[in-house]
Image (cartoon, rainbow, N blue to C red; front, side, top):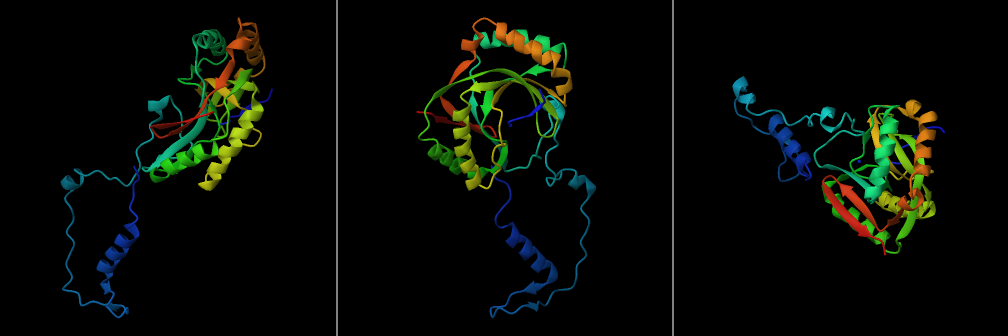
Length: 273
């Protein structure tokens, strides 16, 4: 089985910055706008020499022009797919997947076996099925975006789906590898949901979802491209563990009851009927 792409984690700046820059340029060049609309050079006083700011004073005010340092050691070695910028909120739409005790018991068997092939694998902290790529929203777009999402989801009913096919995924940049459960029933309902999510994305000029998506629940991940280690023999053995696990067919059948939107540290829930 070939590696699959991952199907799929306050506003700064001022609207008056352009005017402020224009005023600053006017003050520097000496141009003013008379009442008749014509421009002339103002009578400027004697030029004054700009004294340098002492270094001790500069050190008191570190530069705020550069963005915050992206320290990958603080988030497990993961690399951002787009740079952090103040006022930009990473936004993602998904269906949450409740990890019941029996589900975690299954992972307690699967993950140690997978780690014999790739020791760097770690369990996901939470589980979900993506309905969108991660996109960037400006802060003032968040509430209109969520309202548009709710408006597009008013007619959708709750539905059951099953995700029990073990599959290996990498993200587009090949910087992370995932083990996941691919959806084997409920695929049509997911496509319908994505179709409406895509409409919302288009309304806001954002990227839509992948073509021919493989809907799945990610179980574990590691940094880098490790699909060669996990494909083949490892993948086959993991699938055998799932198939032989007690009541796995019932265990991995889940009711989709809500859609969730995560934007920065904010969470919004859209219940299905």
